[in-house]
Amino acid sequence: MSKMYTFEGYVRPDGSVGSRNHVAVIPSVICATDVAQAICRQVAGTIGYFHHQGCCQLPLDLKRVTDTLSSLGCSPNVGAVLIVSLGCEGTDVARLYDEISATGKPVKVIYIQESGGMSRAIQKGIDAAQSLVLEISGLQRKTVDISNVIMGIKCGGSDTTSGMASNCVIGYVADKIVDLGGTVVFGETTEFLGGEHILAQRAVGGPDGPVGKKIYEIVERMEARAKAAGEDMRGGQPTPGNIKGGLSSIEEKSLGAIVKSGHRPIQGVLEYPERVIAQKGLWIKDAPGREPEILTGMAATGAQLLMFSTGRGAPQGFPSMPVIKVCGNPNTYRRMSHDMDLNAGRIIAGEKSIEEAGEEAFELLINVLNGQMTKNEALQYVSTMDIYCLGPVI
Image (cartoon, rainbow, N blue to C red; front, side):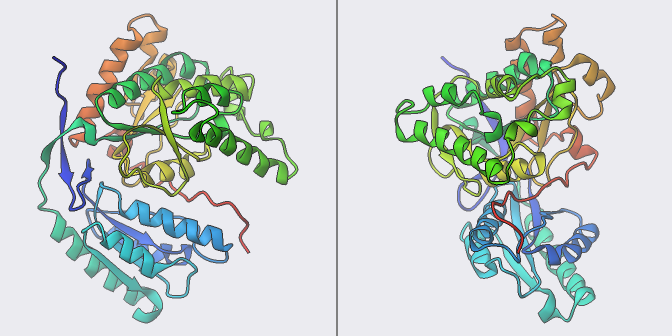
């Protein structure tokens, strides 16, 4: 009989389960960021989604920003939301409020212009955020099945050990989560290049089915964006750090990167702002490789945590989503032990098998779901975020 796995999480009114219980302060536009930051500095229990979007953008991007902020507000790791609006932005504040409120969590809005300016809005926001913190701070964790997990996965600061060790460990955990009825989401469309045919073969319905065709489509779409600027994407990928770490081409990087997705069938492809709602299993999200944008996209899926593979050492986290750093390089782990959560470099050193390190990583995942801090959380290295937009600022 297979072992039953559970964790202690915050069960939200809509049935989703969080690993954290934050009040999210969401500026609806970059112009409101200073006010939102001031509120967060003053009120314990809050986190801020500080981005650079929300006005003077094309309509498709304004919708995209609204959709992404809505998905972030609906995250199960968020127990309540304070929206900070300037009052004349391009994002749809009314829709943002309605969609987050529909989850059953408390939501408040303050308007800087209507409040009488920055100082009055800060005071009003502090009072609102404090009341929300007090309202949700007494919520208790409950025992839930591991099938409630949505795990994001990513690699960054990669070197040759990433594909040989840390990505393999995350792939092991990804397979285990899917086999236990949970959900795993991976992205970095730029790092599918040269390996997209392998992913398409794993798509439900095969490479010629809707999912397989969508995988090819998002890769072609990403390449087309670079070509529209008169550039080859290979000019930016692999990065200078990747090259110094021993990765010679984007194809080599891609083959190592997709290892972290494991071996299970790919159920579908999510657009950047979309949440995972019903279907379980392994999913792709169309997202770039850069940390601020992809971490935001993964949190927007509803992920309660993310496993992050690195070889050279990428220490940053995310405001609302714990980021577990799995390091493939034993030398990097020794240098950056205060930032790396798990030493997968023991595989390179011959001290552990992929399976043994994978089980260690899975146990750590359960502990983090139960409330154990990741190292970036403990250091408050968690403000990295932005929203991936498609068009110019106008």
